[in-house]
Structure formats: structure tokens, C-alpha cells
Length: 278
Ligand SMILES: C[S@@+](CC[C@H](N)C(=O)[O-])C[C@H]1O[C@@H](n2cnc3c(N)ncnc32)[C@H](O)[C@@H]1O
Image (cartoon, rainbow, N blue to C red; front, top):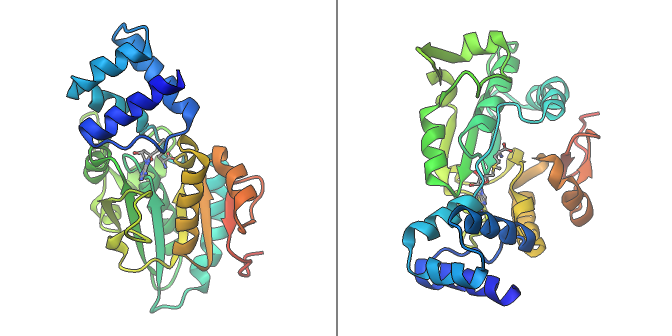
């Protein structure tokens, strides 16, 4: 089984240029099993033969490995901590000529980046002079980013958004809710592979130094060494007192393998060093 799986990994890379070797073994195995069921193939060895002659299947497998599921305000408690505690103090500490810098790494179809932008807009509205802020939102999936850039969502997709925020930040046309231009202007969506080794942060950001880095529900698809590679990259991109926000599933990895401190337990919010947010 392991050899058959290695052959599939090898074919994906040598024939099609898709490097799937960094995915967690069980996740990879389960995903290939689902593909085999979908096309009624019983053995991994037969699947490998089929795959080697079928570009569409290679694309299907690659797509199945890049799970894009996301939601607005996906982790309610994390967003509550951000809204009530972390963002107000972070923004209060910024001087008028500075900028709040945020990275949504693995942003999928944009809901995470727009959720953060809504929170910042609301806190900013209470300041005498609005603080400049920039959200760099990146993903490896071009198709997910195309959806993010358009910012069109169904009623079901926006069910976690408060009614007054829907009124303020979305424009409704028939059944579609489109994110308003005011929010869109704050976010720059671009392709970036967190595993690539040519750069320390997305080039759109010019330099890292992010006050907030979101990397939620991305790490756990990968093998431990790849998780740690990404984690290290995220930490290096954070400002001195910056925060890292992950998904629930990644909390243990960050707590165990990084020097970051848990600052808003039980939410998976971490900080490089305590920076006065008490
Ligand atoms: C399950 S979604 C999570 C979306 C969002 N962060 C959330 O928590 O709702 C995972 C996203 O990570 C992206 N991703 C996976 N591996 C990546 C990599 N190496 N570099 C950049 N993005 C990646 C996928 O394309 C997908 O859009």
C-alpha cells in the first residue's frame, strides 16, 4: 500500500508537476481512497495506471487535496476575542502615521479576509481619525482567489454575518450578496504557496512585519516537517508583538513546536511576546 501510494505521489509530480509529497500520509490516503470510490477503481496500483494516462484525474486529485471549505467568522470565539480585546488595543496603540498590517494565509474564497476587514472597519469608525490598514490575502488556489476577488456570496454563505453588517458591507442583487467596494479596497488577493522557499512572505506585502497573521485550517493537511516549515515562515513574518491566529486543529502544533505564547485561551491566538494587551 505504501509503495502504491508512493507511486501515485511520484506520478503526480513526474507526469503532471503536482507535488503532493508534503501532505499528511493519512489525509493523502483517505483522499485517494475517495477518488478510487468515485471512479470505481478498487486498487491503488490500478488507480496509479489510470492516473498516469489521465490529466483530468490528476487535476481532480489535486483539487480534492486542496480543500477550500471556509466560512465568514468561522471560529466564533476567536473572532469575539479579536473584536473585543485584541483589535481595539492593537489599533489604539498605533500612531496616526502607521498602518495595521494583516496577512490571511490560506484565505480560500475570501470569507476570512472580509470577516477581519469588517471588524477593523467597525473599530476604526469609533476613532477620530481612521487608521490605515492593509490585508494581504493569499492562497495556492487560483480558482478560490478568483471567487474571493469577486466577493459574491449566497445567502447561506453569509449566515454567520450579523444583519447590521450585511446591511453595511454587502450589496444585494437578486440572490447574491456582493462585498462592498469599501471593504474590497482594503484587501489584496494574490497567489502564494506557503511551502515555497524563495520568499519569506508574499511579495504583495513588500515586507512582512504583520501585526496579525491568520493561518487557519491549513497546517493540518501537511506532514509535520512541512507544518513546521510553514509555521516558521509565519512567525518570521510577524511584527515584534504580532499575533498568530490558527484554527482549532492547529493549536497543539503551535503550542508544542513554537516559542509563541497563548494569549487568549481557549482561542488559538498566539503572540511572539506579550505586548501590553492584558
Ligand atoms: C480549509 S481552507 C481554510 C480557509 C480559511 N483559512 C478558513 O479557515 O476558513 C484551506 C486553504 O488553504 C489553502 N492552502 C493549502 N495549502 C496551501 C499552501 N501550501 N499555500 C497556500 N495556501 C494553501 C487551500 O487552497 C485552501 O484554500
